[in-house]
Image 1 (cartoon, helix red, strand yellow):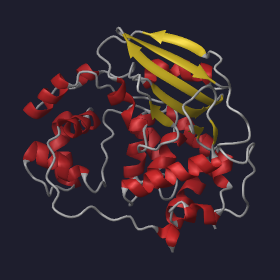
Image 2 (cartoon, one colour; image 1 turned 90 degrees about the vertical axis):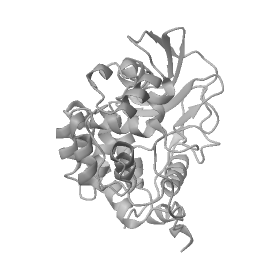
Image 3 (cartoon, one colour; image 1 turned 180 degrees about the horizontal axis):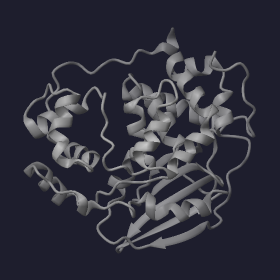
Length: 326
């Protein structure tokens, strides 16, 4: 059973209970990157769908994120202007988020290590010089939504993440845009009743994988300080977490430039079509095509996706299963 008892929360609903903080100024950090930086490209992979309660882009171009840091929940607002980045943060995790700000924006990433071997990738890199690989330093906030995305449509996964975070998370600290939340703690995830997983459209297999992961959350978070390959090995010790999920996690938590996603339904065909004209490529063929980019295969795949060279759709989009209606 996914859970036997409903967790207690400090508020009855995200829209009520503990009020949000006022418009008090948060902690501020200004950072100057050493090259081009495009916030949307760098932070975009952290967004889990247009309704993600932990991620918001506002009309002024700022990006808002919430995280459950080792110091507690926090809200971060990031904006870029005039060659510098300004981060403002609120909540117990504010100082931690600002300390990690350069890494999150790709300070540890080295785009110059990528040497394009295909004209398509060379042109794409030239057009999008602001691409850097984010490194959040947080494992569980990338692992849990990645598990939710296993073997379902993205719409189903995004809906499940949105429902569960809004229902069991907590209001974002500070003057965050409306209905932003911080993801639940490991203990709260562990106490979500089985029927709530079902109502969110999450089958027992994915729910059970998340429950096994949150029971060893402290050990998994320690993987943030490990090399990506070792971190993937630690994640895959948990039953239900395989190469696809571990790669999707370390791409975000570690900024791993070589963590190519295998086992994906669409990526092999997209890479195969872009680099070899083979829309029916499998994982083995994708890895063969990416072999010249050893050490930078994830970046190569990102550039392929940004190039816009994807095969045309040959079948209707897979329909969501909607298990919550069963």
